[in-house]
Length: 189
Image 1: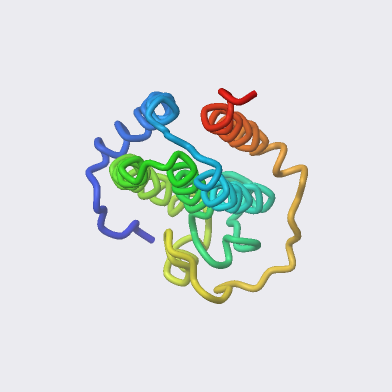
Image 2 (image 1 turned 45 degrees about the vertical axis):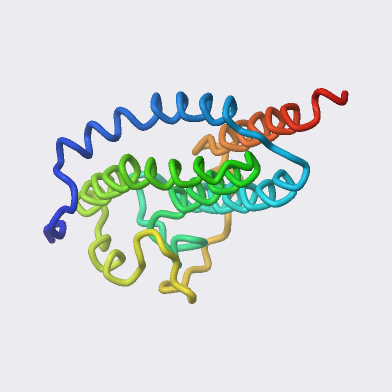
């Protein structure tokens, strides 16, 4: 089965895939510099970011990259829960940093760099995973369905979580929140 019509040119998607990590690191540094966190903003944004991290962790414990079609856990609701979790975590960090413009920049970053990569990854999965076309027709790309579109008894796997190195996102979350807390309260310590 052929991949549906692309929204983004393939060359742009490939460029976005190469640019998103270095651009993301630079954007994180700029965010930390511009952030103006307060106790209240940390109390609002921290839990949102933590929920995003939780979505990523849940997804990583169900994902066997390029080996088997994931339809369990969050993959029963949304095709790209890792990206959804990243977006939620980013929005939480933007709220924690108390700068609405940073949230708008994050959404622009997501649309410009992550959506083309999602499309490119899905084109790859159409080629290598049997049943991906049917899965893509049933399960939404980024906005989750309200009810599971697949039934699966496959449990969360801590071994997959580790193999997918999702603990790196948890370490990044902790470092980011500590930096924001230091910026908010460090002068009083």
